[in-house]
Length: 73
Picture 1 (spheres, rainbow, N blue to C red):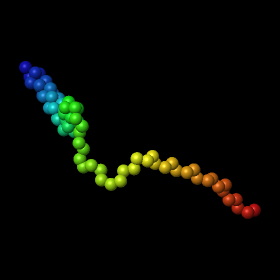
Picture 2 (tube, rainbow, N blue to C red):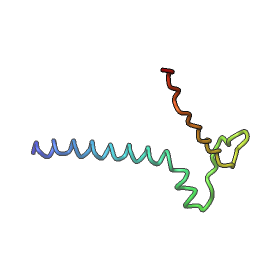
Picture 3 (cartoon, rainbow, N blue to C red):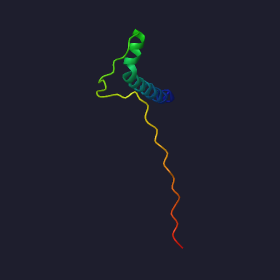
Picture 4 (tube, rainbow, N blue to C red):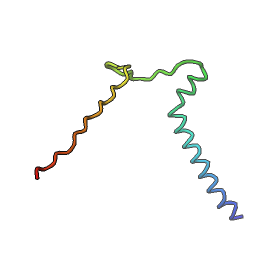
């Protein structure tokens, strides 16, 4: 009888952990899920303010390699 009581504790702790993790996941992505079910887009606030560049970043130019200077003999 005592084994059943002690076995219930890990079960309830696992169940509680699953509920907590599920609530955290729903809190983070619940708006996305609801929007997908409704077929609408999710609005993300605040919108980025300022200039947005769509140009690809410039590649750095290769540096010229100079041979090391030798000391005069």
